Length: 210
Image (cartoon, helix red, strand yellow):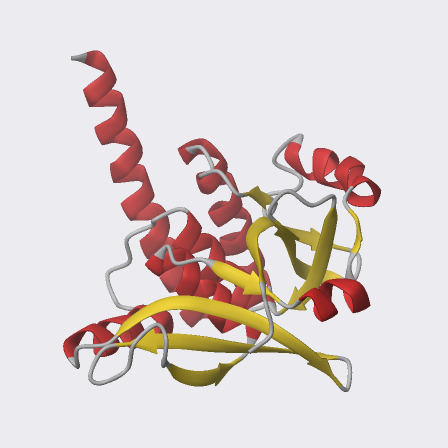
């Protein structure tokens, strides 16, 4: 099997072309932009922020099912670009499978990232993928800095956990947009997240006051 590069999900950001995950090999000055849908970006951000939801999302359900049957997701890989599409795979161990001889499942990169941030397992990328799609990180650093400046860019998120206030701004913006386009089911889910987040903020304030 090809040697892979361990990477980090450096940033999830909204760009002129849509939502993108910027995947950066550790210690590298190159990033690989992988464009994903809005709902997929939301799922990744929820996983990053450890936001608790009342009803399990698809990724939460998958991980719970994997746990119940005695498997564990220990690694995800972005291993190929085919027909301008990034291909990912999940590596699982348990039930007769091991890290040396894992169960391998094909996956969309967005789903793989959403699972990885919840499971806190490493992400690897093929050197060929980096060679084909990588761009210098300094080309996007200024844009990332602009995203980080304030609430007008609520979807930007770096590898560190976002402050609670930033999460609230992001979720409120997403709620307003969902209501504006009459996506009421999605708006209800975001509203539930906001309620839970407000409770978390109040709890944090109480802890600070003690």
